[in-house]
Image (cartoon, rainbow, N blue to C red):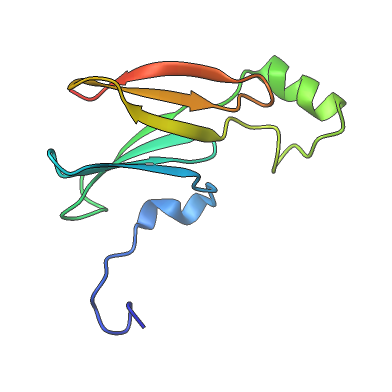
Length: 111
C-alpha cells in the first residue's frame, strides 16, 4: 500500500539479501545506520538511495571455516551479523558483530 500511494522510498541497496539486524537513527545529522550481514550502511534520511555509504565487514575466513566445521550453515550462521550500533561520542559509533560465533567489536568514525 505504501509503494502504491507513493508515500515511501524503498532502500534499493538491500537487493543483496543482507539480513538487516539493527538500526541507529542519527536525527541530528539526518542519517540512519543499518547493521546487516557482513555490512554496515550509512543512509541519508532525506533520500535513502542518495550517497549510500557501505562498510563491508565480513568474519575472518578462518572463523567462517571453523563455524562450518562445527556444523553451522554457511549462509545463515557463519557470517558477521552486525548486532550492536551504539553512539560512542559525537564522532564515533561503537559496533559489534557475531564474527561467525567469534564476536568482534570496533569503532566507526562518522566524519
